[in-house]
Length: 267
Image 1 (cartoon, rainbow, N blue to C red):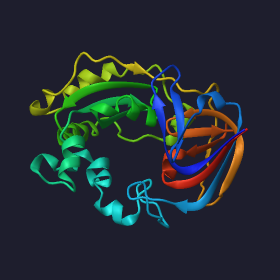
Image 2 (image 1 turned 120 degrees about the vertical axis):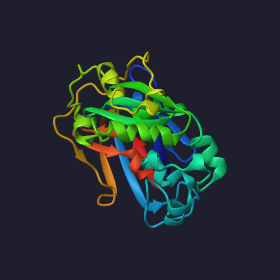
Image 3 (image 1 turned 180 degrees about the vertical axis):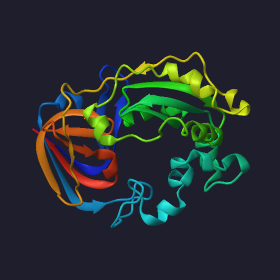
């Protein structure tokens, strides 16, 4: 039996076949794939600590921030969700040093297959982590830019033709046409861009296929909300994205509970 407690963080992942996952609670790192098939018990203490400053907070904002950090920390800037709003290249940001590392660096625009084909943006160091976190089963880099703003500009144009959203229910049920070829969309989407953005398109990248540690996908999924239930237990039956499957029907988005103080037992 393994018992750990601490402030939860998003799972660490490593590209493999299947993806290798580790749970993180404060300073504890627990490889979790080997425990699929075991009983898992999760108990939330009711306590939340801000992932930025560490202070106690009664409510979590933007997956783990207290409100003061949410409105001031560069990690929760509006350009995190909307890259096209980034102004770091104009010298405008919440933290210049942070933006030089995270905004004024190479970014990729990509297509991924999650619940369908979607377009997204991520920093160059976050591939394939970003794809794994989203539960993509295929992904393809289609553009490379020198900053976050330009990647966002490309994404905005492409969102007119492909979605930038994932249906988490369909993704977790693997309810998707696995035969879709992302590369077939690349040339078509390139022609939709204005000339000044076409220069950033990558024509020779190949699809990457991602496999997850789950044998049988459920036909229905129900999300567990720890704001309503403080305790949940069942058999760990798989992992995809930042979700764990319990009893092949219940799912928990661990990233959602970043900063929450949990006790987790594996039997």
